[in-house]
Figure 1 (tube, rainbow, N blue to C red):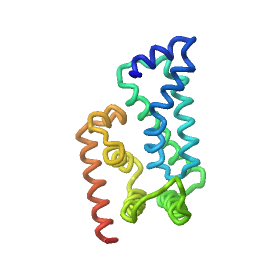
Figure 2 (spheres, rainbow, N blue to C red):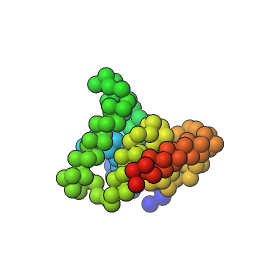
Figure 3 (cartoon, rainbow, N blue to C red):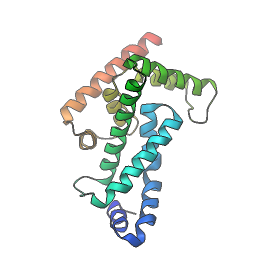
Figure 4 (cartoon, rainbow, N blue to C red):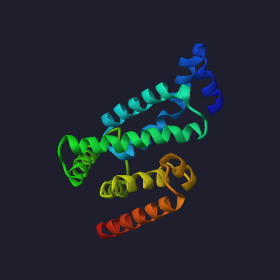
Length: 185
């Protein structure tokens, strides 16, 4: 079903629940992976995904359709991730490198337990660990481009940042990743 049809059905009280269920089915897997790449932990990802869909439920009636639905959903998910990571840092009064260290430890736990939530080749594991060393916004840009295969224009619409700034951020992220991976290999 097209997004416009989903929105129209959602705005109709009689078909709201049905339309929302269709929307969740259509986008939950992509949003899950987007969030998971940022917060690493499966339980945190599930919690954030639920928060995203609660916000969608509350805001979809007033969605102005100036952006694509996909863009709006990714903006909500991205903001939730960044807010979550910032809250985590403040809650424990941790410097950002300690939060990233905690995320890396969770990643190691998933890998060592052969968790169903993380499976990957050795190079993928190394990439994930290197990604945790990037600043959150730079990591978000890298994830959106590399894992979500988004165009710079789509990313610009989601993040409200210029295409040029996104290209620069992605370029810097790639350089840092290349440097760190070349040191490890």
